[in-house]
Image (cartoon, rainbow, N blue to C red; front, side, top):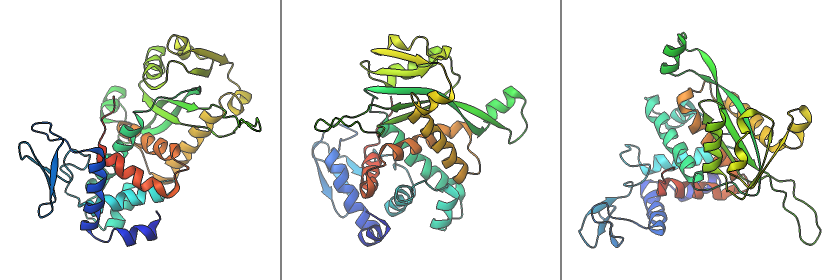
Amino acid sequence: MNILDFSTLYTDNESCITHFRKEREKEGIVCKRCSCKDHYWLSSKNQWQCKSCRFRTTIKSGTIMEDSKFSLLDWYKAICLITFSKKGISAKELQRQFDRKWYKSTWLLFHKIRKAMGNRDSIYQLKGSIELDDAYITVETTEKEKKKQKAGRGTVTHSSITVMAESTKLENIETGKRSSHCGYYKMKVTESQKSTEVNEIVEKLVDSQTIVFTDKSTSYVDIEKYVEAHYTELSSNETTKTTLKWVHVAISNAKRTFNGIYHKINAKYLQNYLDEFCYKLNRRYFGKRLFDRLVVAVAQNLVAN
C-alpha cells in the first residue's frame, strides 16, 4: 500500500472500523469479564457482545488505542505517515499534518505506536550468528538525572545502548554463494555496560543455541554461559568492517536518522525511538505490507516481557 491506495481505501472512520474489526477478529476477541472467546458484532454500536455474559467490547478496547480520544481514522493516518516515510517523522510534523492545537496529544499517539512496535519485536529471539556491541546516543537528561548530576536545564548527555545483529550468512544450496544480507536487529537501552546487565539482555533476547561475536570488552566476559559459543576479537577499525560490520552499520544509521528528524530526544523515551528504528529496519523488505503489519501490531497490543 502507498499513500494513493490509503486515500482510496480509508476515506472515513467507518472504513477504518471495518478493516480494524476484521484484523481484530483474526486474532480473536476475549471477554474481559468471563474470558469467553465467542462474540457477535453489534453494527449499530460498533462493538462486540459476549455470547456468554453479554459484556460489550469496543473497537479500541484491549488494544494500545484504548482510552484514546483520537478517532480510528486519525490512528490510521498516523500509522500511514510512520510506515510510508523511510526515515520517519517527528510528532511536531504529525501535529502539523493533523492541524492539531495541542502537541502533547500527537506526541503521545506516536509513542503509543512506537510501544506497539517494541512489543511486537519483543516476541522474537535472535538466532544463528550474532554480532554484539555497545554504543552511545546523544540525549537530553531526565529530571532525575539532572538532580543527580546537578545538571542545568536542557543538559545533553549520552545514553548507552546494547546493539545486536543477526548476521548469519545464508548459503544458496545450488550455487554455494553466501548472502551478504543481515537478518534481525535489536537495540536496548542500558543503565551501564556492566557484564551483569549485558548478560540479562543476552539471556532474554538471544537463543541459547546462538554463536555470538564481540570485541574483548570486559562487559562480555560471561556471555558464553548463555549461548552455544562466544568469540572475541580485539576492537579495531578492521573489526568494525568485518566481524562487527552489521552492528556498526545499524548504529551509524540510527544516529543519522535521529539527528536528521528530532531536535532532541529525552533519555526517558529513547527506547521508544530505538523500537521504531528496529521495527522498520527488521521489515525493510516488507514494502507496501508494512502498513498492514503495523495495524496488526497495534490491534494485538502485546505486552513485552
